[in-house]
Length: 125
Image 1 (cartoon, rainbow, N blue to C red):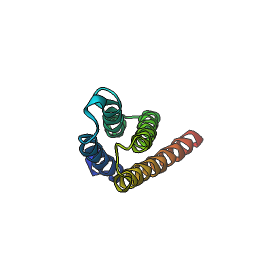
Image 2 (image 1 turned 180 degrees about the vertical axis):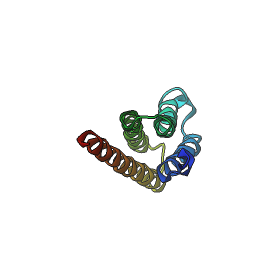
Image 3 (image 1 turned 60 degrees about the vertical axis):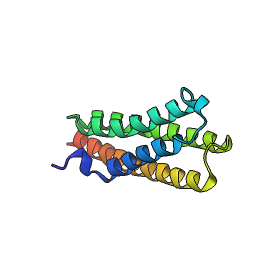
Image 4 (image 1 turned 90 degrees about the horizontal axis):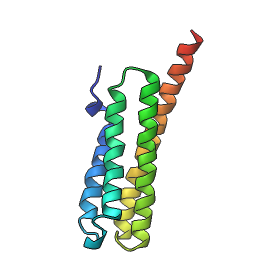
């Protein structure tokens, strides 16, 4: 059995966390307890919930934690959009971060779909 650290989704989302931390270092200091904190917490939550869900025994639990991760990724996306609208992020950096976030969302959707299918097959047997 692979470790959660070997999952492409976890690797991709961890890289997003690193980029979020780097980019928010250049945000206005008055945003330290506002958008910086919220954006960082949402990014960290997304990767942490992938790991926690992977450590759960039941498929239902894995799905639930992946859904929480997906929600956090949508929060990251929304906060990045707001940050770009406030000119905290240059367009080129925003596009790269949004692409990374979208890729993570698509990957988590695929894994959720996979586990939902497994769960349905399990209930049929």
